Length: 168
Picture 1 (cartoon, helix red, strand yellow):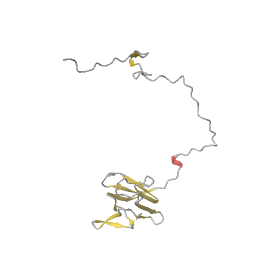
Picture 2 (cartoon, rainbow, N blue to C red):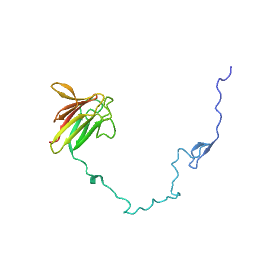
Picture 3 (cartoon, rainbow, N blue to C red):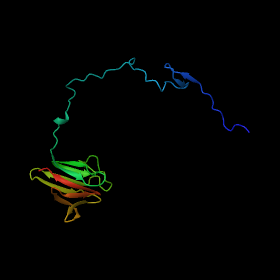
Picture 4 (cartoon, rainbow, N blue to C red):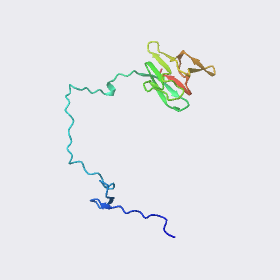
């Protein structure tokens, strides 16, 4: 009987300047820190005059005030709150909606919540969503096309129930 395995072929090794053993084919030692880059020449960025650019601070941008919230009561977003601002607030799955809900049964642009500051009135409108927009009334969710939205109303978009809270 003989041995049933091949012996490992011997690979050539070499030592790095710090004394670590490394394979001959390696260019740098994996155990040593990278070499300092102080010898590299760094090109400074081009000089830009003040007249060529304008810095805008985020606080300088005029954002509409928050006038209400939607709070997810269940599902993937349970416990999250979504700000409602003056004017139109698109609700849907698209990233460009003001309120983004990633429920698989929510349409890309599912509903619109509008706040009219002159009338101090909230309204919700279904935007032709595939699964409809529902408001909880008289002990059950009722499908709506458009309706005024009142403080503490519960709406349902896809499989996500949301509580509406208005500010004042």
